[in-house]
Amino acid sequence: MSKTILITGAGSGLGHGVALGLAKKGHQVIATCENWPQVTQLRSDADAGNLSGNLTVEKLDYRSSDDIAHIIEKYAAEVDIFAPNAATGETGPIAEIDVDRVRHVFEVNVFRTLELIQGFAKAFVARGHGKIIPTSSIAGFFTFNYLAPYCASKHALEAVMQTLYNELKGTGVQVATINPGPFRTGFNDRMYDTLDQWYDPETNFTEEKPIRKVQQLFAGPDLQLDPESMIEFMIERIPEEEHPFRNVHPAGAIEDTNAYQKSIYEWVSSPEQAKEK
Image 1 (cartoon, rainbow, N blue to C red):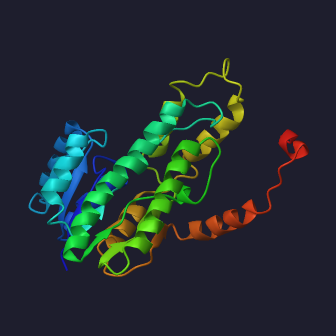
Image 2: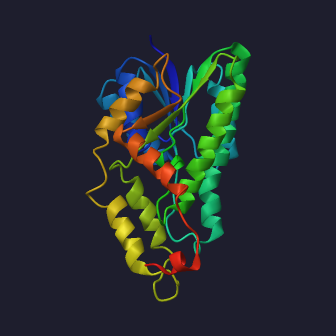
Image 3: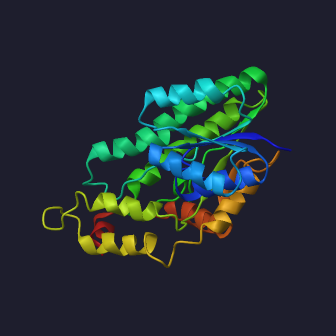
């Protein structure tokens, strides 16, 4: 059955592929992009694929209250599924990164995302149906060194969504999350570009070598996966009538996450432990 789906963050990465893929499947898609050049590109891509009849492209800059209000007012009444996908990130040692950088990540990934969710939730509850399914991350229940701003924001989003799931039971509104692992979309690479704007091994006390080691892992060629499988997963899962609350891909990340969560209870805090390298 064809659905009307609004997905944000469609100017690049997973959102771009998912928006086009959902339209190709016959769904009516409203896809938002952060800026006008992205809007132009996505419209051009839709035209090239003969998808313009199924794909409407709008500008939605999460920093703009006017953009947010416009999208809610214009589309909340007609959308079946709201899929907030836009996100940002910062990297660097949490003991040294400027708190304003962390605050910006929370503003986009948590507060502005929640503002949009609230607008659509109100409309969905009023009519007794709808689905809210944001793109979270395995970083919502896993932490990685030097990625604390992003991980913390996704942990917060997970708490919001788990609470929303329980609070909206009985209203007819479905609530779920999509939790990608590390995929080669350029997002991880851009997070490390932000690090180089401020980190200086000559002035910062955190050693550079372990930071660059993690950078090579997350922004390098080895760990990151081909995004096509994640795009296909989202295209199939977002419009489904019934599925789990938490939707992790690749599936192997579930086992890794469970092992990590269990290990936290075994951590030891002591001066001796702190001195270990």
